[in-house]
Length: 130
Image 1 (tube, rainbow, N blue to C red):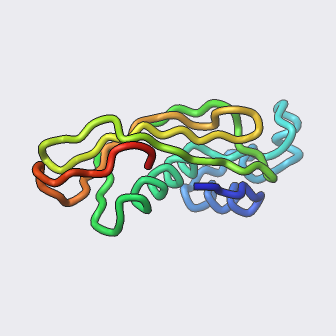
Image 2: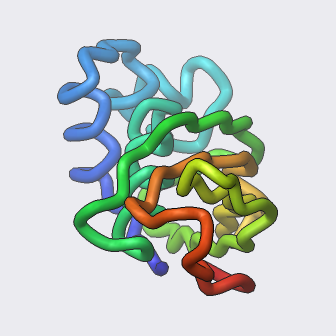
């Protein structure tokens, strides 16, 4: 999944998650603190990772666990490309997905997402890239 990282997405994500740190909405303040521009907060990234996984598995998918770590920042004008690989199938109808989101600077986010897909253990979930 490709996500165009716009200034609006960065600011809206920060405001929606009630993260009023100035580095997420004020370019001058971000530069004063050593960043070239505003950058995406972890809560916005977390939401985009969750959306990526649930979009793949469909409307019955329910996030059970999202564990991510940030790397390179997402700045306005970047494109973040999310990719995933199924790493485990649970007998309880859960699927574990390893997720990476990369931009021009490198890996923005890495992590693991566990999702219930609403299937029984005897149903095969497509393995490979999500």
